Image 1 (cartoon, helix red, strand yellow):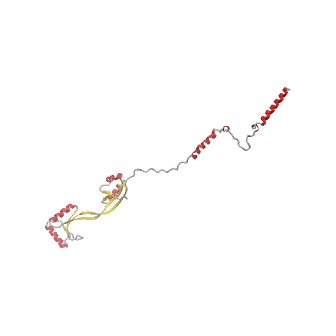
Image 2 (cartoon, rainbow, N blue to C red):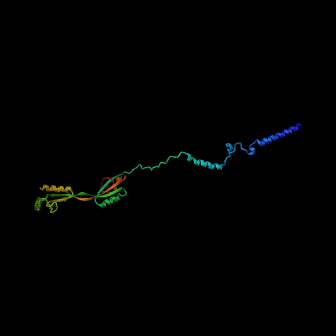
Image 3 (cartoon, one colour):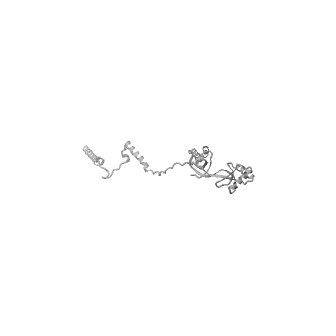
Length: 237
C-alpha cells in the first residue's frame, strides 16, 4: 500500500514538473517577454562582433570625415612677390657740344649699351671767328684814301679800305685768330698816332648735343667711351 502511494506521488510529481517545464518557460515556445511591436533590448556584450574587413571602411570613413567637422581654415591671403630693396638711380646729363653730326652719332653708338635713354639735338650758338683791328670810317671814300696815305707815311703797312657792306670806307688793319696778336697790332697803330680799335667777330654756327640718362653705377665710364666733349646736368626725360 505504501509503495503504491509512493509510486502515485512520484507520477504526480513528474506530471507537475513536466507541466511547469512545458507551460512556465516563455523561451521554449518562442514567446517574447515584451509586448508585441516593442523592440527588444540587447546588451552590448550580446551584440555580434563585426569582422575586421567591415571595420576598416568604417574607420577610414570616420577619419576622412573628420576634417569636415573641424574648424574651417582662415581664407588664404595672396602673398605678393618680395620687392627688390635695391633701386637703380640715374643721372641725366648733356654731352657736347659736338662739332659735327657724325661725331654726335659716333658718341651715341658708343653709349648705346650703357645709357638707359638718349636723345640728340641741335642748337645755334654765336661763335668767335676772330678779332678785327681797324680804323673807323672817315665818312667818304676820299677821306678813307687820305687816311691810308697817312698810315703808309707812318710805316704802318698791311691795310685795306673796305668798299662795300655795313663797314664801307673803314680802314681794316687785320683779322686775327689770337686776341693777343690783335691787341699787339692795335697798340702798334695807336702808338703811331692813329685811333685804332679792336672788335670780336662772331657768327651763328650749329652745335650738337647728346642728352643721356645713365645709371650712377656707370656714370664714370662714359668718358672712356666718348672723348673730347664736356658735360653738364640737364633735366631728365
